[in-house]
Image (cartoon, rainbow, N blue to C red; front, side):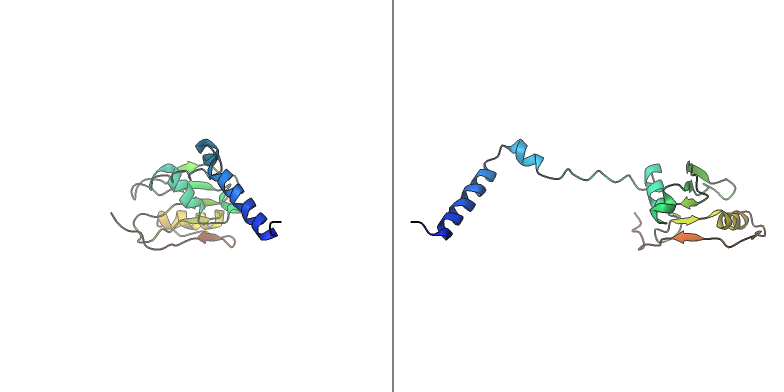
Length: 139
């Protein structure tokens, strides 16, 4: 009579051999699909994702996403409309780190005053969320 150890080893070897002999299409079905390619840095999709990374999803999911003005005399560009009173901006290219930011309406009033070199009109406490990551490599 075969020992229980021998029976277990034979069973394990049989299962392993069966798994190795699956057709290639069945083996491929058991592997995870490749991750989708990340959007190209600087693209609209990348800017939206980067801006949303500045705040928790509960805020950024419904925030307006803006891009910085192309010049000192132009206005920010809306990349996506929002509904919750928060506005998020992607990385500011002129800074050494990836630094997206999200701000509520009060902070955006301050930002507007700063951008137009006028006195801010602060009527309540404002909130902002920012995320500064490691410096980027310049190419």
